[in-house]
Every structure is written in structure tokens, then in C-alpha cells.
Length: 449
Image (cartoon, rainbow, N blue to C red):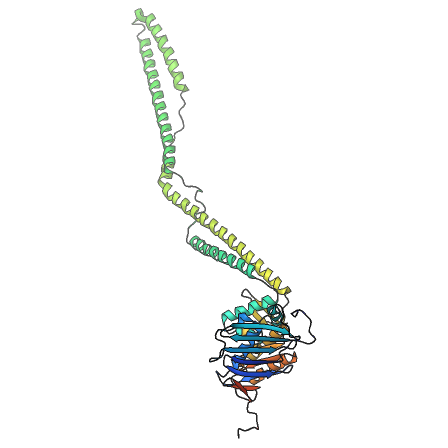
């Protein structure tokens, strides 16, 4: 067997192919010169695209074989590609199944042929216009971005996943910020109000203490007044007794003793009365006023506490939101740094923004003219091409003559070959497919006569 890593003496390119009974092709055999463009023309369902699909199958191996690829009415079909030092053969047999092989110049089969073919294939396959055509849909534009980042060795999946998670968290916190800010804007706040709610039961207990003090003072006043009254009575009695001394000589001694005892008792009562301290007069006016206003004051306090709680939630939410914003900014800076240091295969072609939008020389790729998109797409394909100098493209009718020439010239300048299909029977076609076979197109000056 041939070593697929053996060196070759010339570049690997498609020198020719032979296709028999594949799809709509009955038989086609073509030789291709270096740098030649092969444009296959014809109407729909004549075999143009069948040739391209046959070549794609042969280059893709068994995994690329289409269902029902054998021409209707036949039991076998084959594709043979001549790529210089190698021959690729694909035989389809409705009974035995497919057989695929790659042989070297010595005719021996190559070991691990798919490993060899994968070396020949570029990063986006063989179609130089595929990159531009991807931009026709949102999903395709995402694929464009993935292709470019893969080529530059960029992988933002982890950063993007983290950014998405942080963004969603920040959005949730942002809703909290809006809710708390809206609530705060409608809430009153009295800076002069007490900091805490006062319980009416506490005020009532405080009032009871004051009432007790009032009662104690009233009792003391009553007691003292009673003692003073007794003193006055006794003093009156002493005075009366003194007046009657002369008349009551016989009772003088007794009365004197009684008078002495009464004086002594009066002195004792006077001293006790003088010893009683009467507290300053106190009223319940202030506490009664506080009790009357307690509920109104407490409402203000509760309103203030609710305001402060909402403000605290708002401050926390703002802080959390800013934290998420800082993380997003850090992730964006990390992506920007990776992009700044990335090496893309084609100068001027890259990605930018949160969505990794494809740009060329600072302009969004989708905003370029169709001709410019096809030019960039072709140069991108050539810059990332594999070892096989081959470009394959379908539906070239979408290209105007000037753009078609530009694409052909770019590919030819690299010594590569372009094999393409176009709905046309004009003289720009290399040959025309009619009912599965190749015919020469009518050239200017020629006639069917």
C-alpha cells in the first residue's frame, strides 16, 4: 500500500474526471488544464449539478454518498478523479453497495484514504462562494462568524455563556432596581419623626406611674394638713386651759401636766409634719398629649422605616447591578483582547461586537455589495484551502459576468481549477449538459446549419 504522507513532485490538482451513470449523468469524461475554469452549462435537470455532486461524493468518501445516487434504470455507477499522483475511485453497485479507494501513482491503494482527502479539503470545503452565500440567512451569518473564529483559533463559547448568565442576572436585578426606585418615589419621609415606633401600652404604663405619684403627693398633703389641724386644736385647748387656770386652781397641776404632755405631743407632730416632703406638683398633660398623638406619630415612623428599607433594597440592587455590569465589561474586554491578538487568514476580515458580527475592513460583511462579498469569499476560501487546488461551485447564474470573471481570475491566479455549474447555454460555458451528456456550446460565428 502507498503511504499517504509520501511527498509528491507537483501540486495536487484535479486533472480530469470520468463520471458514468451517476444521478442525471449518463457519461462525461473531461481533462482539465492547470488554472482552467470549467463552467458546466445547460438547462435544469440535464446533469450540471449531478457532475458537481459526483465530484463531492468522490472527495468525501463513503460518508458523502447520496441516497439513490445511481442513475435511474442502471444498477451501477462510478466516479473517477485524476489528481495527478493519485486516482480516486468510487463505484456504486445497487447489489454490492459502494466501494471507495484512493490509489497512488504506482497503482497501489493508499492506507487511510480519508485522512489523505481531509488534508486536501479547506476549512469551508471546496466552494469558494459558500462563505458569501451563508450570509443570506441569520443562521448562515452565525456560521460565517463561527468559521472565522475557528480559523483564527478563537473560542468565545465559555465567555459568551458566562456573559449570557451575567446579563440575565443583571436584567433580573435591573427589574428590582426599577421596582424599588418606583416605590421609593411615591413614599413620604419625615426627617423629624422618631426613629422607632412607640407602643401606646408603654405610654399608658408611664402615665400610671405619674398618676401614682400624684396620688402619693395628695395623700402626703392630706396627712400634713390633718396634723397641722390637730396642732391648732391642741394649741387652742392650751390657750383655753391657761385662761381657766385661776378658776381651776385645784386642777392647775393636773392641767399643767396635761398641757406639758400636749405641748410635747404637739412638738412631735410639728416635727413629723415638717419632715414630710411634698413632691413638686406634676400633671399628665404631656403624657396625655403623647398618647393622643401616638398613632399619628407611629404612622410617620412606620412610613419612614418602610422608606429606609426600600432605599436599602434599592442601594443593594444598584450595587449588585453594577457588579454584574463590571463582570460584563471584563468579559467584553477579554473578548476584545482576544480579537486584537487573533490572526485571521484574510487581512481585513474578522468579527466584532457581542454577536461576533462578521466585518471586512470595518464594514459589516452583509452591507458589502454582492460583488465584493463574492470577491472576499473567494479570497477567504483560497486563503484557507487545503492541499487540493480545486474550487467547486453551483448556481453561478447568480453572478453577473463581471463578478464571474473576477472569481475565475482569482482562482486561476492561484493555479487552482474552478469547476462550476450555471443555468446557461451561452458561450461562457465550457460545455453544455443535455440529457446526461456533454455537448459543445454554440460559439459566436457558428451556426447550426
